Each structure stands twice: as C-alpha cells, then as structure tokens.
Length: 480
Image (cartoon, rainbow, N blue to C red; front, side, top):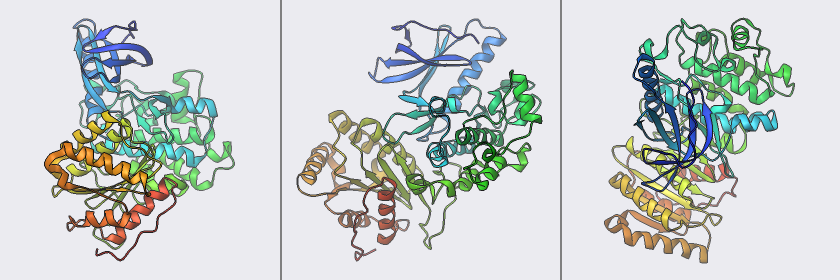
C-alpha cells in the first residue's frame, strides 16, 4: 500500500488535517482538528484506490486495525474515536498523544536504567495483557510504537495495530505464508511464514524491547531483513549483562526466558513476565505494581496478594501526577497535579471501567492535595458530564481537600458550584477537610465488598508513597 501525503488544510470527512506527525507501513498519521467537536486528534489516512482483490484486502486490513484498537479500553492503549472511508481514502481517528516515542528516547539516551525502563514498560505489559484477553495479538511491538506522553510522569501508550490479528481470525486476512512485522522484534516462529504469531510472539517482542532498553542495542542485527531474521532463528542470544555488566544475572534470566526460541518455553503469559520483573522496580514504579501487575479487565482474571481479607485484591495506577487505588468496590484517587482536561478524562476512563464490572455500584474517595488546582470551566463541565455518565453506579463520592484555610475554601467553593448544577446527584457528593472524615463518609455507603477503615487507610498511604508525597497521619479509631 503506497503512502499518500496530503497538504495542510485538506479535509477527510469532518477532520481538517494540520500536519503530518508520523508514518507507518500502510499510512500517514496527521495532527487534525475535529470540526464538529473542535478537539485536536490524530488521524491515520491510507489510500484505498480501486476495487480489486488487493484493494479489498487492504481495506479489510485497515478496518481490522480499527477493530483491534477499539476492542480495548486501557489507559496505556491509544483510544480510537472514529474510522471510515471517504472516496478512496480510509481514515482512523485516535487521541492525539503529544510527546515522543520510546525509540526517540533511546536514540537520545542510548540505554535506560532498569527501573526507569520498567516505569515505561510495566504499563505497556499491562496493555498487551489486556489485548490478549480480548483475543488480539499486536505483532509489531517495538519502541517506535510506544508513545511517551509529555508530562511530569510520562504516560506510555501502545499504538499501531496495523498488522495485529485476532486469535480466532482465519489465515486469509493475516496472509499465511508471508512474514509480517519488524524483523529485529519478530519472534523466531513469526519469521517462518508457515507459523501464526501468538500471544507468546508478543511476549518475545517485549523481551527484545527490555533487552534494548537495558543494553542500548538490539539482540540481533544484520545488513538486510533476511540477515536479521536468520540471526533471530539461528543466532546465539548474548545475555544482556555481557553488554552491560551492571545488570544482575536475575534480569538476564527473565529476558532470556521471555525471548526463548521455543514459544512453549517462555512465560505462561505477559502477566507472568510482569510479575517476574517487579523485584527490579523501585520507588513509584514498585508502588504502582507490587500488589497487582496489571489492571483486570473483562474476561481477564487478575493476580492479587491475599492480605487476609475478602477485599485483598488491589490495583495501583499512577498517571501524570494522579495515583489511583482500586479495591473491592472502592475507587480512591490522589491528586497532586492540577485538574487538567486530560487528567480528568484518564481518571473517569478508569472509573467507568471499574464501575462497569461491579453491578452493586462503587464508592469513590477523591483526595486533592494543595499542590493541585481546581478545574477550569470547560474541565468542570467535563467532570459533571462524566459523573452523570457513571450515574447510579456511584453510590457516594467523598472529596477531601487536604490542607487548611484558603485552599479548603477554594475546593469547597468549586464543589458547591458543581453541586448546584448536579441537581439530585448532589446527595451522593460530599466534601471533607480531613482524610478520616472522607473515609467515614464513604463507609456510610459501604457494602460487603467495601474494605475496612484500616485497609482504606493503607491504600491512601500507598498512594502518597506512589506520588512521593509525605504520608499523612490518619486517625484509626473510626468504625469499620
């Protein structure tokens, strides 16, 4: 499929193209403006000339990409908004991620410390595990397809589903007998056209990315694509520590396990690979993932450490100055960063999915630190829209304004202003000046799934640790 570069100002459906920002094997990606909503988006455009067999195959492959990306709602997978065909152009509309790719970062810094690499890659492993749970194999995981969103705590997002396949998909669409992917990151079985790539092929690619991040070099290289694929199949895999002696032997074993030449000798799943990597995570990365490596989604069971309670399973997520804990039927968010539109949308995307999996509804505790700031008018409207969308699934939302005096009054003022617009929903929204007060209000609407006061206190402290914020003293004598 040939690439087609369109001039700035061109229109594809309702999207006005601003400038090209990237290209792949089957299209060009543009920054664009959605004329109906006025928002900035990324639009991938592919030419679809003619109506022969090849044109139909290209169109089927393009729509497969849209379908694969739309299968999963995950904070580390780029969100798909729209797709379609206009004339002889197919288009795919996605969220615009401003920043750089992991490939850009590696070109600039050559290699990363393992803990820093895991800060980027553990969320990507979570995203890939979620893809697999939805029956999708990505088949082109590489640094160039991992976007790092600009911010204090860059959020990594997986992109480019152009050659992905569904696990139960017939071979006609995935071109049995052909090799597809980027040779340096292809598993040995994927280089053989007669074998179909599987979830463990994606795991191999993640092992290659780990290897490259830790050593600054790819494990197999060659003058041509054929030379690279031959090295992947026949060559000797040099342990990472041979190239970077500071790397521990245990890290070698994990990477070599993920990159084993035989698929059945690799980790059982990407979740298992994430769990093996956790001992090498430190600081905020460890706080995010040490109790649950990935966020559970539909059709996917999540590992959890038993802490002696029916509500022991806990997920910790951190994104650009926000830390979130999910436990039982409780959603807790700690806000260190200002309440921007992007951060609000990320939080509510997590809430929406969490609530959808709990028929009895959820309770939410929102903790706002003095380092944060209230939303502007447009963001406040978005918050109200999203609260309405969650609807009766939220039995109570307790907001805590941490800090005294003027700051609490500011947050209370914003809360009251929003409450006046929320009508009957106001009864479910409360605000407190202390953490123990907020937890107590939340526990007024507890269910059999709701953690105890002591357990909630532990999650709040873990969130403070995740954001490197001084842990508060929380009174522990409230009824649980």
